[in-house]
Length: 151
Image (tube, rainbow, N blue to C red; front, side, top):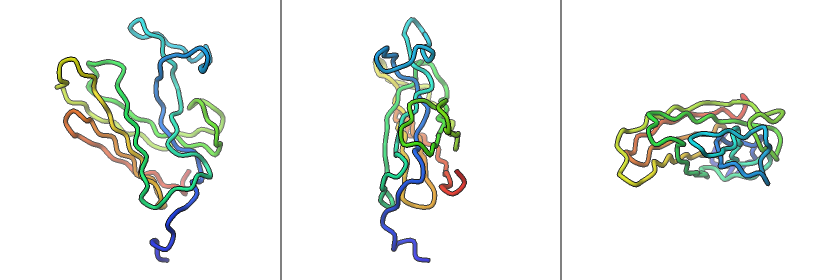
């Protein structure tokens, strides 16, 4: 009954987000290659925040930083995925499910010569995962919760 008695728990699933990475023929399958603005990208990459059966402390957070592909983007959508499998490469792999979505409106102002940065944080250790995405340029943030039990 007291949530403070349990200091850690094992993640029931592997959680992460879907991202684009620069295409690497040694790591990525050819069918995932897309070309945008003359650059080759790998689509549908599952960027892992925590793996199934990994122990996470109550209140532990994992932070990743991303850069939108285009400098002129006015919004970015972060799709959060879960899988019972420990080893996941792509969001299209078997048994990968969409758990939630965050849409972050991006500021118009990016200092000249700099790339926009999106700080994405997953906070673990409770009966739900809290996910926050922040535009580092202006501090604007959006947040969502994902129920461990539902997925």
